[in-house]
Length: 240
Ligand SMILES: NC(=O)c1ccc[n+]([C@@H]2O[C@H](COP(=O)([O-])OP(=O)(O)OC[C@H]3O[C@@H](n4cnc5c(N)ncnc54)[C@H](O)[C@@H]3O)[C@@H](O)[C@H]2O)c1
Image (cartoon, rainbow, N blue to C red; front, side, top):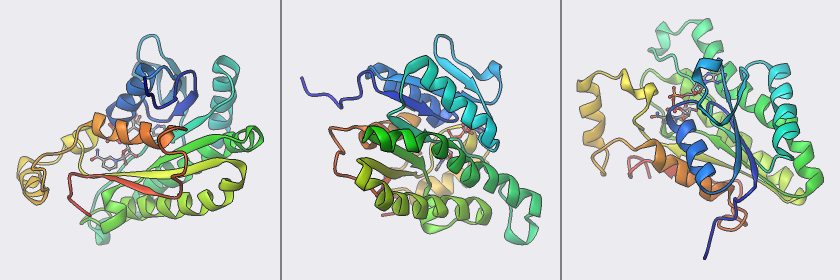
């Protein structure tokens, strides 16, 4: 039977305690991968899974997390830099603190996630890195200048990294979700939600699982073996 070839692959997912990250963790486990995920406090951990407490803004904590995954599960094949945050406001109202808080998680945090693991991937000559960008990073969004700037930066990061990493057999791609039903979008007022849904040809928000399958494809050494430096949109044709 055909498979994505993720059985026994060690994969680290950041922000795996809820939303899109939790869907990724569950799907990869169903596929037989050995999955670890980071969360910010133990109360966020899911039973029976390797949860590691680490804030992505803290490089030392992420280095320790990488070490812990390798000690417990073995050499890491896949990295999913999924943790992200938003502090939405009109540009004129954004404070420097709002700017830094979002940028520290969404951009610095992605760097802190990949950096401790990539040299080992190069040495072993295999690996797949998937970073979570966003429709906002591709087409912009009102009240999200800070968030969109980080999500656009992710695209530049994976495109450049893919060119450097190819000679070592390592791939780097981004997934760009549209509006997905998670804690991040739950706070949107119904009026705003209805307006957004009217713009989406699929006439609904996506589900976390819709993104998880795209991530699994990009991780797969079988299905996406020659796919690198790409941005895979999961947005119901909201932006094409
Ligand atoms: N929901 C959407 O509509 C949507 C759309 C496009 C992109 N995204 C992106 O998808 C990713 C997942 O978001 P989600 O929708 O599941 O949101 P969510 O708020 O449910 O989950 C975010 C996850 O990131 C973690 N996180 C946040 N700050 C962190 C930090 N400093 N250190 C470690 N972990 C941290 C949280 O604990 C949580 O597990 C994010 O990168 C987000 O920007 C979401």
